[in-house]
Image 1 (cartoon, one colour):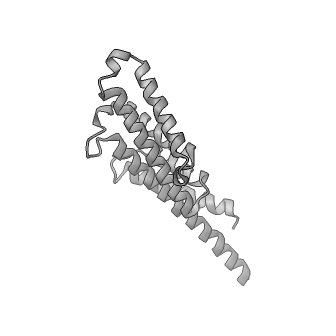
Image 2: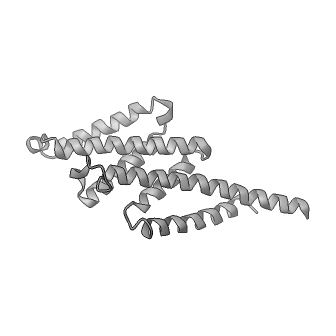
Image 3: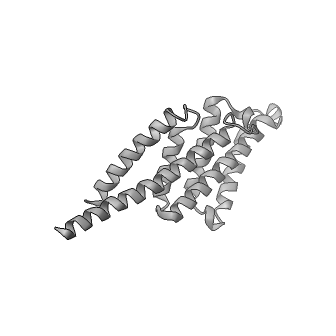
Length: 177
């Protein structure tokens, strides 16, 4: 079996499983779209164990930085006197922090951090949950996005392994024939 066919089968099956899991047993508590973003990051980061590590660390770092920026923009009280310039400053500082953090090899993938940052910001703004950034529950967008992205990265890892097994089993079957 070709690697592309094996990957198509693996991704299709695991994509269906992930969607069922997120919308069914998890009851919509997590964000399936954030999981798929992390899943794509896993492959963008080269897959394997290194891609898994880069994805989880980078997505989480970006989400944490976004959470700090969002908290500063909405909860610090500074925004009332500065208007819309304050959120812009907070985002600018967050972006600068992500780029500087990329000097650390484990966080070198700036796009991966940006995906985490954007996912947290989108979820928090979509749910109007900026005030929940310190809650120790699934009301906290930081918890939701980081958990969703970790699960997505793990699905990426597993889908890669299964695709590899499918390619390998096809090679063994052809060798026996």
